Length: 434
Ligand SMILES: Cc1cc2nc3c(=O)[nH]c(=O)nc-3n(C[C@H](O)[C@H](O)[C@H](O)COP(=O)(O)OP(=O)(O)OC[C@H]3O[C@@H](n4cnc5c(N)ncnc54)[C@H](O)[C@@H]3O)c2cc1C
Image (cartoon, rainbow, N blue to C red):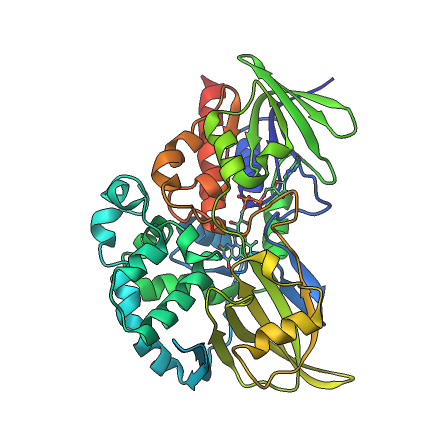
């Protein structure tokens, strides 16, 4: 039977970084990835004549782990187009049109008040459960917004911005998700806003993960699905879908909380993982690329959390045999509300808040029905952060868990995935040296 020091399950950012670190520490490491590509929930694919990000896209220099990797591999960023026009849904459900400045003025009071107590709740983003957050963690973002007494017009706009950030209906998402990301940007919501949706990687996320994969001193095996992990104090046996087995001293699982039940662990996973697998984290939305006829002036648009699509913006322009076109990127809070293969369904969703666009094509990847992820960018349900985070970081015997879902600083983002991979590689290298 093949025997290695460490098996890393999954070749997303967490797995690739963990494997690179372990290999550079002199350990014999192998990465097993079920997909036929690396990158996990980041995936740059050529569609509609452009390299489109179907998953994670925007990074920022206030994300320290991501930025260190970008520096290491010489990745540069470019700005997504800023908007000349803004559209949003008013309290009566009809569409408003204005400038970016007008929209920002409408939301700024509500945005600030949602996160006003961030410094007491999470004084340091690197310790997301250390402050007063315990007392607030049963609260959803919707609870907080409802408590502010905003005028209806400002409340509708404030909700629409938050649903864009958290990718789920606001009554299902813990206030902690809003607070921890704003804490990561020093308490400034505008910077959180910029960090999460402005700068994309030149050459695409897939070129970024390919660079890390090429730097792993060990095998990265694609189309290799792990079925089970049997472990005891001496090590583990990892069984693959083809029936073969690998003996190893340590295992790193990088599976998202929602998908981890896809592997049978014996002894079974700690209760925290089993419970999360049933309860699920909050994020449940969708991302779609839309091809629109003609040159649509640069804009962003926000609908409400009750719509199939809640955010829409212009990202790319081009010309082909049919003439000029614009590529828009859209996000919705619930993947079951819209058929992303239907041009008619997407046209109707767009018409509801950004009139005057003719949809000629749509393309997307449904990460929620994808068995290997079942999640987009992780947001917690109320209570999950303080109840679960430290337990999720604890190894189970020789099995370690590295995933953005159990990161401290930018949990849910690429940065959190890298943080978790570095953390578990360090822990394993230390324990094996001992
Ligand atoms: C639509 C969308 C938009 C996003 N936007 C952003 C953004 O703009 N900025 C940002 O920072 N983040 C964003 N994110 C989040 C970001 O992409 C993720 O947080 C990050 O990529 C997670 O990395 P990971 O390594 O923790 O997990 P994953 O990337 O999910 O890696 C886990 C890997 O395990 C593999 N796997 C699962 N089961 C098995 C098995 N049984 N055997 C072998 N392999 C298995 C999976 O195939 C996968 O490759 C977005 C995510 C989505 C989906």
